[in-house]
Length: 377
Image 1 (tube, rainbow, N blue to C red):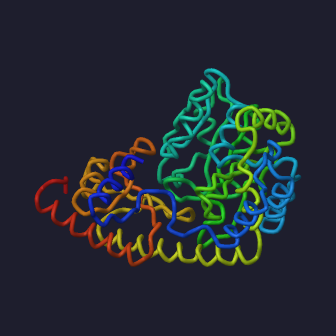
Image 2 (cartoon, rainbow, N blue to C red; image 1 turned 135 degrees about the vertical axis):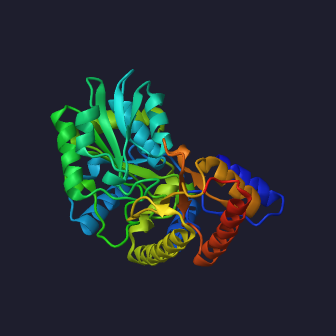
Image 3 (cartoon, one colour; image 1 turned 45 degrees about the horizontal axis):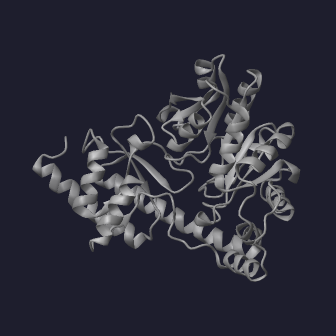
């Protein structure tokens, strides 16, 4: 967000900034979803819904799990929320008390640890590396679980790395949490944005996990602020009470719009865009490798590349700030996600023509500054 603010200030001053820092592709919300939202507004469907969301939307989400993944989910276990962040808040409010611990991968999405702190819990950042594709695995739980641990939180596909957990790994994680009397929370907000592999859900491996999902990423409804969670049956009643008190209800027009997200015409648009993201991934990965950046893990999902800039710098945050100032290319430093001082996250959230421009500017920047001795060779 800091990089984004600086980039927007440069744009206001007339610079042509290429945005590779924010987790939001350039695609607009698919038109069938927009049309459904407009129709809902025109029909004055703007009143509160139940705290868990429109029954027809909960049923549609359950139908999506059945058709895409072959998993049957009772719509009662699906709670629609104000964004995936709202879903995670509900789950953590249910599970976390003062000084309770939640295990998280480091590097990982930074807001997750702040949400744990919101409920006076302690986020335990577990260092993970290339040997586990930057994923938290069952073996980590054995080494870091304590008497205060109540849950482990993983993401598949992950932010910032784009790596995906295998079904066997998810089953092992769920089993390890179950054996210790804790819960497994799986962030699947980038589900659907996967490449060279099938679409999957942790619900295929375990039925007693908490799933967090969103209409923001795959369905490209970021500003509509709509997500959902799937909970074990025992947790639903308490989650509903929490939703009534924390949010009252998810946004009504967005819910009516989201009903169109599962229509064949919408899914066809989304598949074409997924293929475009795959082409961008391949292009940017190849160019960054040519420039001397090391891709630390194979990106199988989401829309990020997690790369090591150690050839150029031992301070990626300073590198990113200078790159923005000199070449108007915005990327995210790894320290935003954990103990990763030489890492950078590139979001391939622009058309290939813009990615080409960004890489040309990056090449000029690296060459000039290496010659000037600004960065450590």
